[in-house]
Image (cartoon, rainbow, N blue to C red; front, top):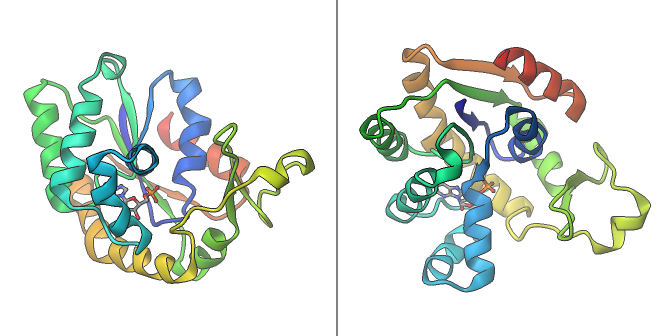
Length: 208
Ligand code: AMP
C-alpha cells in the first residue's frame, strides 16, 4: 500500500501513522521527523531547514523533495510506504507523481484527517513527545504515564505563534493539493476529532 496522510498541523498524522504502519507492514516516512533528525545531526540540510521550521514556515521545496524522493527509493519502500507531512505543496505533489510514474507505480490512497482550526492550537500547545520511545502524548487529551512525564519534550515549533503560522501555511499551500487527489479518485476523508482510538478505527475503516 502506497499512501499519504494529509491534514493540518495537530490533526494527529504522526500519532495515527505510528499506530497504522505495523499492521500494514510499511515504513512510516515523516518529512518532519526526517528534518528534525537532520537539524539534530547538524547536517547542511538541517542547518538550512532549522530557521524555517522554528518560525512555522515551510522548508523550500528544493530541499524537501530531494530528501523524500530519495527516501522512498530505498528498498524498504519497494512494497509501499506511508507518507506523513509530504507532499505539502503543489510542486511537491507533482514531483511525487513524477517519481512514482517513473518507477511504474502509483498511490493507492490519500487520507485527509479533518480537524477544525478552532481545535488546533489547543491540541498543538499541549503536545509532548518522549525522546526515549518517540511516543506522542497530549497533556489533556492523551495523558502520558506518570513514569515518563519528567522526560517529555515539546517541539520547538509547538508554540502558539509558530502554530498560527503553520495553520496559515496549511490553508495557503497544502489544502489546495486536496482536489488534485480527489480528481484521481483516491482521496478519503476521515474525521480527526475524538480519542486517538476512535480516529484509528475510522482510518482503518477508510482503508479497508
Ligand atoms: P511536521 O512534523 O510534519 O509538523 O513538520 C514540522 C515542520 O517541518 C513544518 O512546519 C515545516 O517547517 C517542515 N516540513 C515538514 N515537512 C515539510 C514539507 N513536506 N515541506 C516543507 N516543509 C516541511
